[in-house]
Amino acid sequence: MVRDAFAFYHPIVNFLYFAAVIGCAMFFLHPILLGISFLCAACYALYLKGKKALFFGLVFMLPLLIITAAMNPLFNHQGATILSYLPNGNPVTLESVLYGFAAAGMLVTVIAWFMCFNAVITGEKMIYLFGRIAPVLSLVLSMSMRFVPRFAAQAKVIRNAQRGMGQKPGLVKTLSILVTWALENAIETADSMKARGYGLPGRTAFSIFSFNRRDGYALAYITLCAAVIFTGAATGALRFRYFPAIQVHEVTTSTYIFFGVYFALCAFPLILNMKEAFRWKYSASTA
Image (tube, rainbow, N blue to C red; front, top):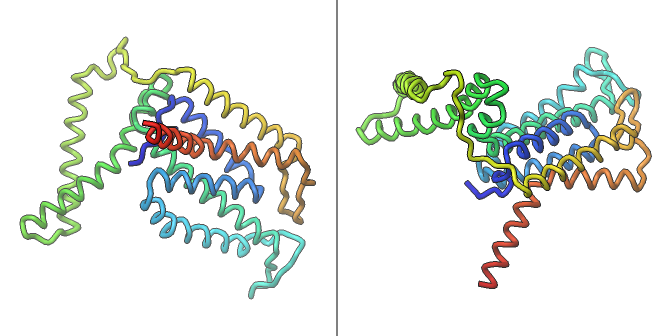
């Protein structure tokens, strides 16, 4: 995995950033804001996961985008601009088509952000964030996030072992071995947790995370950007209405400022990684 500068920030900074960008992606259906959010999420996912993100996007997200956008005009017939009629007589409107693309874009964008969230917010960070508030829930979430990649890796080990013994890997046999391994691993995990005093009253937890000045600057940056964006939403500068007819708020200088601040928020991890790459190249050239 590539070295991500943003992942080394405090878990609170990571979590609040993703809460801000995912919340904005779900709240704003303005085409420009959706485009900015999707572009930054896709670039960050490609940076974090590389070919895996590209494969997931082409195989799963692109069909999801097309299907979701195509289904909306079939069930939503609101809108003043009629493009054609379906065989059952219901109209297909321009507004429903555009809203379908916006809703599909919002869904794909949120999925892309959650891909980045899953890569940055590790199980240790999840336990740190919610361990005292909801210890059982944080433990279940962290174990679930850890179980899926371990399950896939163990399945690969089993298939390779079967091939090494001259056997053809079979789905039923592989699944049976995986279930047995998962049950044995669950017992070992439970014994380990019991030996370490999990659930005992007064038990403390070790943490490797510390909030420093760099995290404070990053948190202030995220908070300021979010405040400016929601100010724009409250004043109506980012309003985009689809029904009953397309209506866009008058574009002014302040509107472009809000767009720029939104881009600065969404691109924050990419900016940090570009900054770190520049520092590395500069230090290498002067060494």
